[in-house]
Length: 332
Image (tube, rainbow, N blue to C red):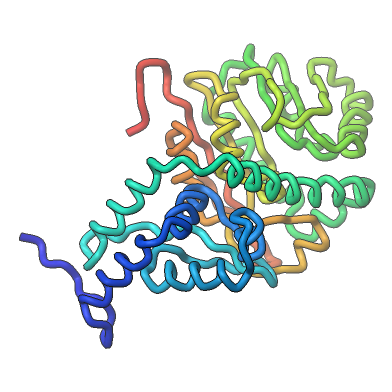
C-alpha cells in the first residue's frame, strides 16, 4: 500500500481534508472552479462574471486557496487565479481530483457564460486598440523583447524537420508586418495569413507586394471567431500572449490543423517584465511549458519538437510543435 505524503509541518491532516470539503460546499465556489477549467481570471473579472461584489468573490477565492484548489500568478500589477492541479500521492490529492472531475460535469448558467464572453471581448478590445495605435512602430517595440531574426533560424529548422508537404497550405495567425510570410511562401504552395488589425494587415500587404509573394492570401479576420481553411501547418509567432483566452485559442486553432499536420507556436517563457504590457500590448507575461502542453493535449494535439532560446535581455523564447494525429489515432 502506498503511503500518502503528509501535509506541511504545522497543519493537521484533518485540516487538509476539512478545507477541501469546506471549499466544495458552496455552489458559487464550484462554479468558480468550473469557470477556471482552462482559463485565468483576475478578482475584478470574476466579480463581473459572477455578478457579485469584489469582497465577496475575494472571500470565496481565499477559501479555495486555503484548500489548494486555486493558484495565483502575477501578471505585472495584476494577480490572476487559475485551478491548481491535483497532486497524486498527497493527502487530499484523490479528493481534489474527484472534486474537479465532478465540477467539470457542471454546466455554467447562460448568464455566467455570457459574462465570460464579455470579459474575453474586453481583453480582445484592449489588444485591438493597442495595435491600431502603434502599428507603424510596433515592430520596433516588439524588437525590445524578441525580434524575428533572433528565432527565425531555429523556427525554420524545426519546420523543415517536420518534412511537411510543400504542396500543402500554411496558415499564419497574426502575421504582424508579414516578416515571416516570405519564409512560408517558399515552403508551401499556399499561405493564408489572418489578422484582425487593418493597420498591421496593410503592412503585411505591402511586404507581399514588394516581395512578389503571389501565393499568399491576406484576410482581415478573427481566426478564432470566423470559419477559416484548414492547413497542414498553423503558425503563431509571438501571438498567443496577445490573445484574450489562450487555452480556448489553442482548442480553436487545433481544429484548423489537418490530420497529420502541426500547430507551431513561438512565444515567451514566463517572465516578470511588466513593462511589456504597455510597450508591446502583451496580455500575458509568457507561458509555462507544461501549461502549453496541457492546453494542447486538451485540444487533441500531441507534443512534438521543441526549442528554447535564451536572449541577452533576460527573456527566453520557446518554439513548440504540436501534432494532430492522423485519422484513427488518438493522443497518448
